[in-house]
Image (cartoon, rainbow, N blue to C red; front, side, top):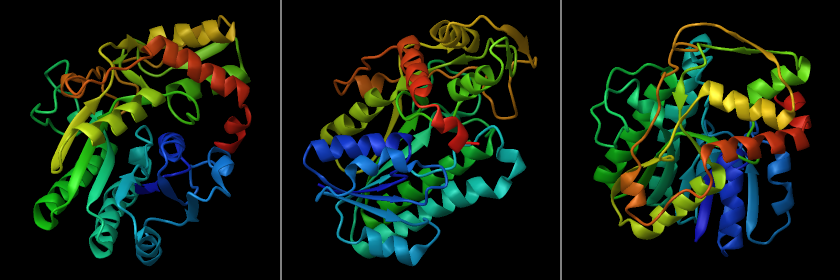
Length: 318
């Protein structure tokens, strides 16, 4: 296929690009490098099947020009900074919702009719059903990030109904693995690099979370595109397990060989919008014949090894 990837220099987008190129696809990557890393794409530069366009999704003219001639859009660019969303409330609107509209409009004008979208399990807020299925009634939204992603899903559904698009919407748990540059593992290792004797944990450490290894995530995306028909498709992506934050901390500290004193911020949430329990029902995806190959603890350990081997990421991420 001729694939167009937004957020192509990001964690998941760059991993997907590698897989598509290996399978014989032509790939155009689009990224403004606000959080993406050039090191994640430089090995593909110069390949005949790969083109990198540096541009912002808010630049509609540049986006439309870059997207023309493609068959499939993977829209993975987003602001994923859930924790600090209330400090810059317009950022989620612009970088998650408005840019999704811009992507859809560029598709409509360019005759592209297929899109895969990286949504989030955060759209479920704090549900009453666990594991949480795709059909769960939506509660009140608890984060600007989740609300902006849900709005993006709604726009995609409307374009499917109105303009004959087909969409594969993936509601992820948090993703771990190589090229990971933000989230709890990154934050904890950064703290321990500064002072290996202490580690401060937001909340009470008993928050229950599910995580998915990045290669399992990409496997699921490509598998769903192959198995599911045209139309509007929504799929949860995660594992059939969860861990407490304290469990993840134990894997991180053991991997680093440190025994810090742990302190806690208190309460069952680390910040506003931090759901104390995330556990998605992935039976629909598993029914297609997919299953994750890496469990959560091994995913955390692989992420630690990657970050230890790439310490420059901490300086680049400020």
